[in-house]
Image 1 (cartoon, rainbow, N blue to C red):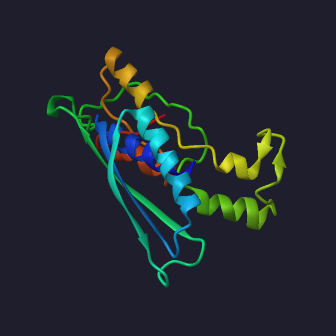
Image 2 (cartoon, helix red, strand yellow):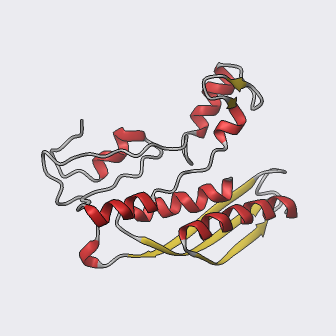
Image 3 (cartoon, rainbow, N blue to C red):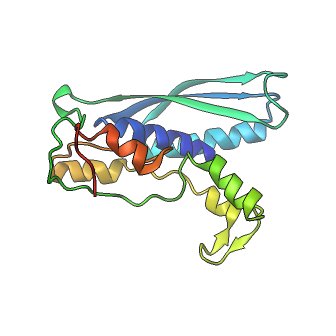
Length: 189
């Protein structure tokens, strides 16, 4: 699911300015390449790329002993998209009284895992195998739910309404992300 997370997160980021994803490049770095892990990462990226109608046009895999600890992987990506200048979403036309619409997430998405590990594992004493009845799954499975891609929902919404601003709620939550798109002096309820 990590490869899916990376592609979907990237698609959501460019969606915030009205962009439609076109191309994606990946970067995988580690101490020593385990082909089965790289295969899983790439399969996840391919699944998300296909679902989003974009092409993975290249990438880099770097084996760097001494830079990464054994078993650690660093995964990054670069997305290229397109938007007509006249359709750019920048929040500049947001005014008092505009409607704020929230779309439910599928979980933590790609941010918040440091805090989640601290709270769930260090403080609560859970393990990835701890079953949580409230979620009807284990902690590990809940944390691995892929980052939801909002492209289809937003593109459908844009066909019916003028969307003036989009905030991708990731690290920093509402408090840090909503002000990025609101015009000066405005807040959200």
